[in-house]
Length: 246
Image 1 (spheres, rainbow, N blue to C red):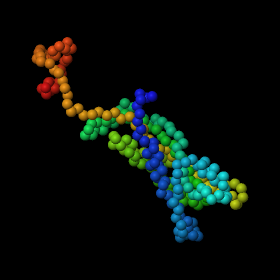
Image 2: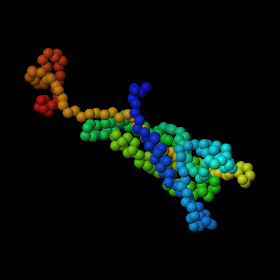
Image 3: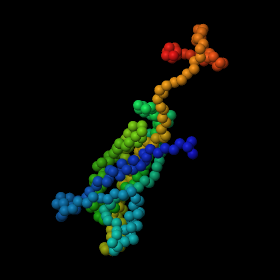
Image 4: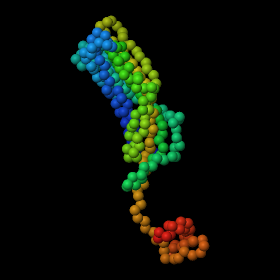
């Protein structure tokens, strides 16, 4: 398939890891009295996992009163890939090449193909106050984009800027039943990660030596035509400097 050309740069994986790193260090404070100005009595780090929100919702619904010893603690965050789409607005000439020259040779790769990666970030909390603390730490970073630097193709020394755009925010208050039933609030943030996907790398080694049989005849005539002994093929020599080298 595809000329048996097997390659993997891990660009999507690297971008997902970089995206998760943005939200891996979010904290909220528990305060005494006033939730904004009161003294801090506890600071919690928000766990972050790669998983759909339905996984956590099902776990909560199966044990809404936390009767079992093992349960999902809130607040927490999770994210997942929701789709891919080609970005025609960032299209460049597909026959253009990027070259990298090193001591042991050179390598080249065709221009990247632009794709958009859709990611949803879920924030699950027990109260609106916890959710608002998390939201206010995230929103100022995106205006509406935040750019990360990702080593897309290390072999070619290609480091690309990956813009991450915040598209929308939705909220739902999943509260049903009596006051003893556990309540949870879900905020969903949708992002677009603008990627450039590169194809396979083609390498060219340096030429250290050349063997050539140019025969024993002399160059004759104004046309500079030369025929090697035993070879009926005629070659026209244009570069005089090349002749002087031999």
